[in-house]
Length: 191
Image (tube, rainbow, N blue to C red; front, side):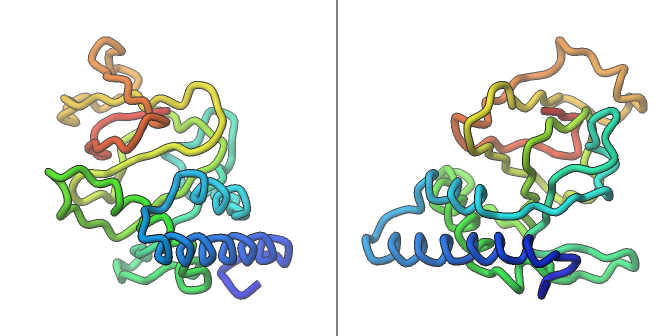
């Protein structure tokens, strides 16, 4: 495929997602409205997620990979910043997700900026801390599922080395179906 590491079937699915995103963006612009959640979900359901073995910190026990893609900017192994192949090849997919988020940022954080979107599918991330975040993160879950709450330790000062020593009583539960949640991804969290 045209993007990095894509099979032909993956490319075909991603082209459908791109077409759906482009149509939804045009419809929203014409009507002067926000991007709807169902439109983002249609794009996500069409998208062919990559098998990602590189997210070792989130892999559920017994799994060697997760369905996960990064849209936007990414840092390579030598520290250079690049736009991801998926973002270049399917710009409206990245655009619809960014537009959805921009449309819903609370007034007190309207100036929030981000460089990357990590898009995950069908897995519950184990307890971890993000390693490359600069500043806060926003998170949102889409689709029909049970569970999926974000367990988050907002007072995690990283003094506890072993994540399994984190105390459940110190965690807060965030309902990711209900809307956007802002959190510090450098603090311990899991789904």
